[in-house]
Image (cartoon, rainbow, N blue to C red; front, top):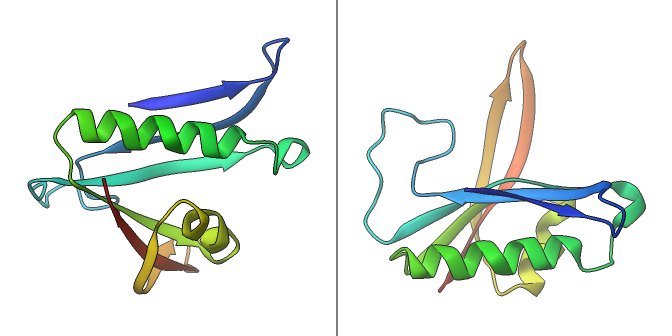
Length: 113
């Protein structure tokens, strides 16, 4: 599921979600108990106002209710601090390629639910 955070007047301010599917690996079977953070973003004008945290808290709670015991995310380098403040621990580095030939470095992070 994906969620959208809005301002009081309905303006989109952030989004994010989670799934049991592996990001970018549609043929890889889900791992029991492991959920994945998916496509989190906050509008630059709404950073550090609790929107991302509220969305993440909703995802963590819903994933736990759906049977997940752990949550994994591929955090961008600038988002590492955000996920660490929510209890995620860095477990490694990852580099993904987005066509045409653009590398995107990320930090693999995980936390229990």
